[in-house]
Image (cartoon, rainbow, N blue to C red; front, top):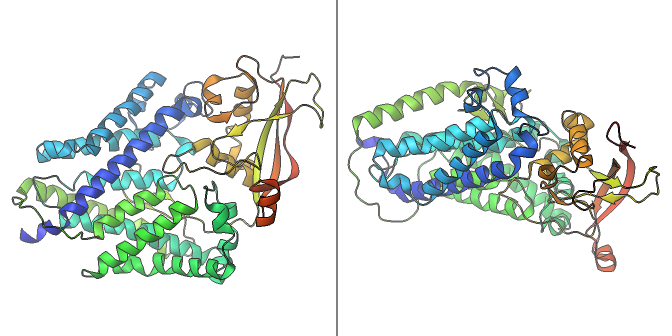
Length: 470
């Protein structure tokens, strides 16, 4: 079938696959570094406890067959190794069928992690990585030109990512319709980046332009992805520019980067396509079958998009093959942070010697400037932002986190930037307090050197110690 492949997209496929492999590598490295204190046998939300109450059919995972922290680490390291091999182009050195199988290995491994990851992995970019990763397995290698069906399905994912996000904004917070959301968002987003302070202080008319441009990007450009070239390429290029703007303005894990990777499916890069043999019949049948299944599964995400009760970031099947996406349907007007402190005092008092635990990414010390971490994902830091919005978000794990700090647990402390207590000498008491944070003004920054100003709001957790201690 001559129409089955699109030789002009071979370079786009190459860049897309290498970019996706890099994101897989980042995701598996984050799992290696963070799983033990978050999900391990002695973690905040242990995987064995989850496996005991959730059956395989609801959450397919290799860990239903066997779990140990060592096995989890082995799977995560194996994912790193395969991702690095794919990044280096190992799939191009294999037969077509073997390349497909190699791409499915990180998909199976990461699906196994996400499906037992509980609240630590309940982010839209986790399922987006899996959905794109599954499709990438059928993009082929140097033995065949990129199949049109898979390129179309990748654009369909990008359409749902952007259009779904655009709809959730129009239906959600009124500030999106009034073009005022960016008066607050750069300051109140989950994890500001090193330039977020400057973005926040841009003139308000420019914020209005930003919001209007966002509506165009998310509600108009996605439709143009399915138009003839060069219109589709222009739409994809504008989406990439918008995503790079978001990369500069905050830390959104790999959400922006995988959206850029997706946009490559519609971007026809100017280059001479190498000659490729016709696709084998078995490959054409396989790709068409995958396309039929995924389009059939798309009905629920489509119904969700057109529903007045649209939900964000929802999976409709346990394999996470076709999902719905969206972000920031509402925008916080004020930023709150939970600050965790410990003391050696035998009797804790309000004005005692309380010392603050520092996190890598979330705001703490008002003088410490935000850093860039994306595409790396600091899972605890993100969940601390949710905890500040409502204690209900942290009900399953916050008490356990405090216990780990009182126990001087080394794995848990590695999730933090700095503990105020030396190793082997944990605090007697730990407390948590809620503060309101705001970016300082230009004058305040010059006078104090602080990028944040914070005000005490209330106690989040009263001074707590381990039972049985004095």
